[in-house]
Picture 1 (cartoon, rainbow, N blue to C red):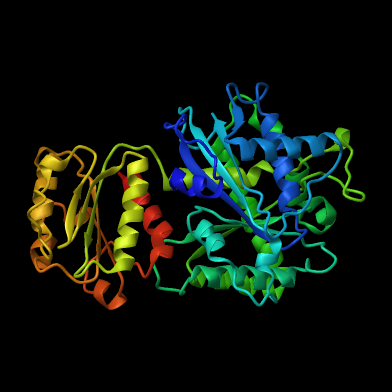
Picture 2 (tube, rainbow, N blue to C red; picture 1 turned 120 degrees about the horizontal axis):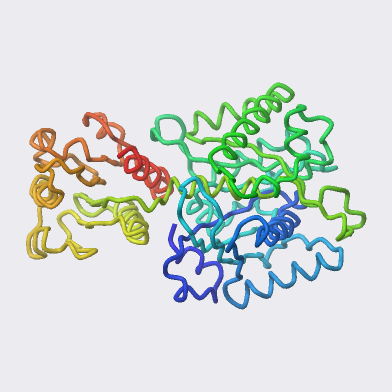
Length: 459
């Protein structure tokens, strides 16, 4: 996830003062009046309450005049006991904030995160809508580690549980998820059941207790994110089982998600903790319930996507004629890895070679190319990694549309086990021994990205 993705949606977001921050997008999806805007107010209220009592040095700072104006508007409405107006077409309510020192399961780090909250009108996702979901919305979803889909089960019109699967499937189809066999990695997706206080008595007892508890009290000194997420995972599994048992449509949705390469998670929250009469709430009784859980889900997966661990990655794009979809994916992956200091080199087949991160001397000079030979690139990488000295070599990602001519030699190369092969055709990848993923277009970027970090984490 690059900061450029956030600045694309928040035009005046000034990125230069915060070069050390990690970028993260939160994309909220859902039907009209299913609680996305109200949730955002509740989330910021809880985040404000984290400092200084719960998390020392925590800070939430809007970035840019647009974000500051929207942030001030949300606070003013809450002070007046008013919920925000729903997001309408032509008025997308995006804003960016800098979150400092929010806990994560990577302990011992004072992390600063530039978080872009991207909120789109609910009309985009209605199943009966003739127009497709806009491309810029799906581009945001494709660049989000874990999109959120809000659904309010007690909504008087489109809030019955059987209404959720069509909305979810419409988004999945727009993502272009082709189904099983696409890759070994599963894309995370969070279903946020909003207004949980309205159907609290229908939930399992353990979920009722979880929803009623004061989530801020869990963030006192000694807060363990790993334990927090273990409980969130248990609640997710319980909600999935509960809904699947009660509603056959939900069961079909859960099973379908598995075959489509989606790791579906569930959580439940309430923005106000009570009924808003005529859109008004009493600020004194405003009691958000479990609104921090979705954010921690995203932080958890963002850390998996973008850890600051030792190691570099060499990205090799070996395209016969630099096919656009392979080239685009290579550029995306290269940009992503560079933003976290992980990229070591980016090699463009028989078209060009680009040097990066001060390692040009270790790669073939610009006037040489190896259009279908991989070993001439692996040899200098092997030497630089000190492989013969017992050090763990870096990871090499190869995106290709044909096998390299020297593949038999590559299989015997010392770095062979450090290669992640990504190709456009399953028939091509079936000729490879291991560590392979199908890459059909740029929408597969998050899966490749997640697998790169998983392999680094394994080290």
